[in-house]
Length: 117
Image 1 (cartoon, one colour):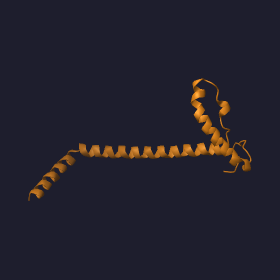
Image 2 (tube, rainbow, N blue to C red):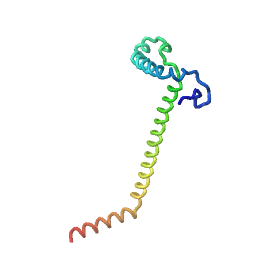
Image 3 (cartoon, rainbow, N blue to C red):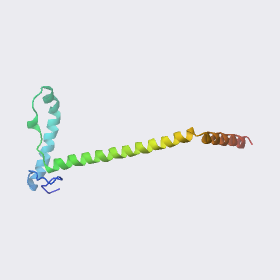
Image 4 (spheres, rainbow, N blue to C red):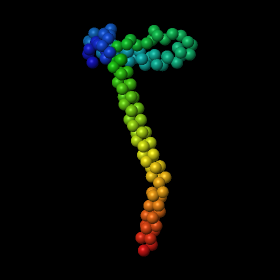
């Protein structure tokens, strides 16, 4: 989005639009660099705030999209888990019912009789 106002309505300090393309590219390079050096700087306890890429509208939008996608996937997994639990509860209730067991046995005997005939 080309607007300098974030989703919360707070204006954010960003590069001008013509500079954002080059800014995006060198932020990607910097992120790649900080990722490879993160373990070493974490290990020796040094402060790696200096290596942090600048916060831009693009970086906020990217994180927002990633979180939104993760949230949607989690919702889908939750819905599927709830559907499975509901189905298991129904099957358990059916299996517990004596009528179901009796019907199952009767159908089994009928099938055996038909196959033998």
